[in-house]
Image 1 (cartoon, rainbow, N blue to C red):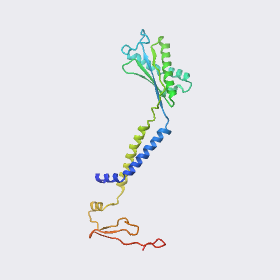
Image 2 (cartoon, one colour):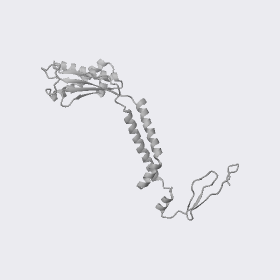
Image 3 (tube, rainbow, N blue to C red):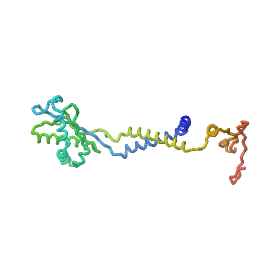
Image 4 (cartoon, one colour):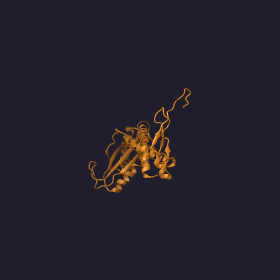
Length: 245
């Protein structure tokens, strides 16, 4: 298929391409708004303090990164998650292990505890409870308050997933590409001639006459004489039983 033929095909099917894109985008919007479960995200922040420092000192230059990584591992351990699950009374430790992420912030003495849940309040409660249990566990293991809750997680106002407008945009683009691919495939599999120019271009022979569509209801298809450039129309009469004469 030549580039010009492909462009002509796309122009003829532009309305169909737009319709498929709109339907796909609308379907994605309905799924995102009413079907797909919403996921809320909330984060609590912990600060690591070296022994001998007061809990009110915020220093990211003193605490070693190794100590921060150690406390991050403790915060995500099964011991902390089981204690948090018991205090929350809802999800199990295995569920918290899948929905809670503990991260050591690079080049700082901070840890973040991020929780995901299908309800906003559950996400905030899970993040705060895991962070609090991590601080208590470190205090029990080290005998000092080296891990302190610096910022409590708040109840999120909006879900982080699904991203409705992103899904709508992606579905619309996907609909355009799929419909364009279908049009291209249909054109490649179609071996019929649609214009006089296609006959001349592909077969190399002149067109003597064509039978176009009916121009009026009371006329039969016009016979176009290419040799003399004349068009002859024959009136058509319909009888009561629907036959023409």
